[in-house]
Image (cartoon, rainbow, N blue to C red; front, side):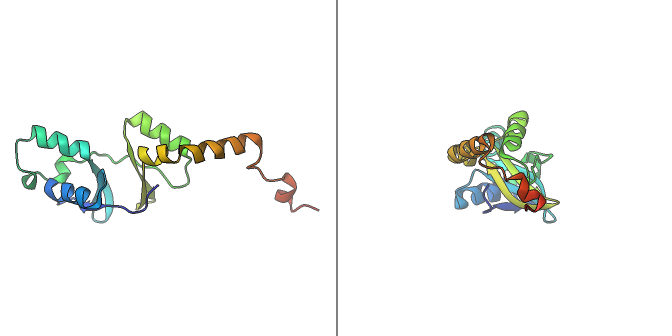
Length: 141
């Protein structure tokens, strides 16, 4: 996951959200309502509103465009769980939250770029290389 998060307040316009995405070279912004994650606006959302709204971006509030409820995952969950949640909800960006605090975002790009590492970890777990000796759990003699 990436911890370099780009956010906008719920009172922002699509011009502000698009500007943040362009300036930070990211594909989404998290919308905050009183510092709490409330939704997400993606590049696709910007394309849709640009095509369908027939209004300038500065007149379109992000709260009207953002996807909600915000689908999230906890930092303690596995990559497999995250991928399943993304697939089930047909999303490519999954904010990571601890309680009500936004701590990162996991994207399909992150998963693809780290695919090899994830496979190696899975193989190590299956082969037992990632397991601890049961004597260690008891304190060993």
